[in-house]
Length: 508
Image (cartoon, rainbow, N blue to C red; front, side, top):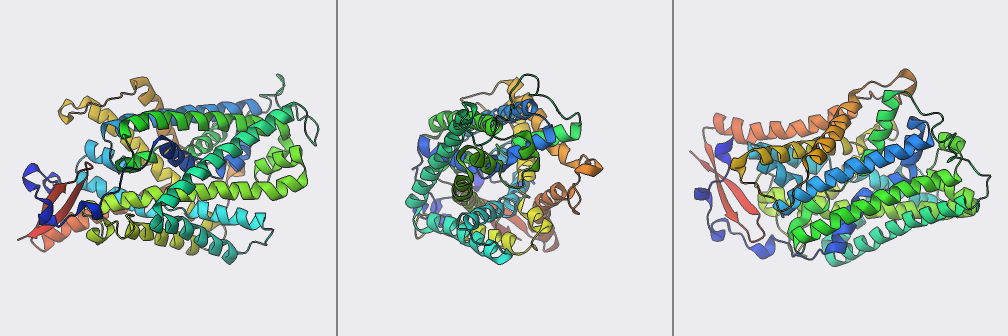
């Protein structure tokens, strides 16, 4: 309802809302390298070490696998350019929340939907479990359900804790781990070149000969679509720095440098890493792999002991970096939602005392992550729950892109970005995004179905959680005021970083 949106007459002084900026706002401390590390840590998790085998199984050939990775990188780079246009035109913390509120109305409804997305669908349970799993492997300790869960909770608590009490240390560790991730990928690439030169413990797999590169390419639209789906999901996270732009030094300039740099590095290294895998691993090992394909490559190039000891630790480091990246950005968006006055206890959630960090939002994020780690039973149900975040992210990224189109076409919005993405780029990205939204509802063939959980359940549950935001909006801002016969009057104050603190007063 537009009448609930603050107007110029609703803006009051800071004193009327008792807002002290030092207790709410963060400092601008993120430079170009810090912005690049936020993107790298969000995108590069454990997937690049295992996903290539899945993509090969679906695509059927080496050539098609590499083409699919290239298409995935191209679509994701287009998405990053869209985030660049939106971020340079609205350089403040919130990311998609800010862009969706600008493009669509009622603004308050959009914010409520984003509240449920951020709190319940941006948890880091899957990477926490990945971190614990590979740490147990590296330590040669037998994995049990509660060892796995206990170590996952410890990893999540570490990521949240360091960002809570020592923010500078958390940022530095993020930067170090992002550099380590890039080094790991570069090392894999160099190992692939060594394999191409004949330094292998196995015979030449002959994966790049002209006659066999496309041999076995799948003719199934479902299989090719699933392979592309996995590739594009492996690039998700390019919007990560947009969520904390109020903490970025010279945000427009920094974003112009950081986004293309990060996406260029990641795309090139992803494709070269896949070439490295094929240089050392025969197709039969790709098809039969029950571990990360990187482990097979390490074993074939360096021997059994190196693959067994080194790789689990490297994957755990990569997954921990992902945990740190999420723990840094998601609580800051929750803090922004506290400023909007729609979350429970908003004045508490938006505070950054005593460590100049969003401490309450950090612990909300940790609590929900622990619930997702512990609540579902081990096995298929657990895997289902911890993988709920990719689909709703795609839905909101698509809505954000449609919002950009709307802002451009509606001259009354006064949208004048300093950087504009060409229309063909927007069209190409929208086509790829719509494919990602529709594909999970396409039924697989009988021999491709996995497990007992219906193939469509994950996207449906994700959409249902987003829909709870609509229910929340209707209940708090429409139904209760109507039943109890009061009206909500927004009172707002602009802050120096471009954000706004809003509270809703009851009037009878």
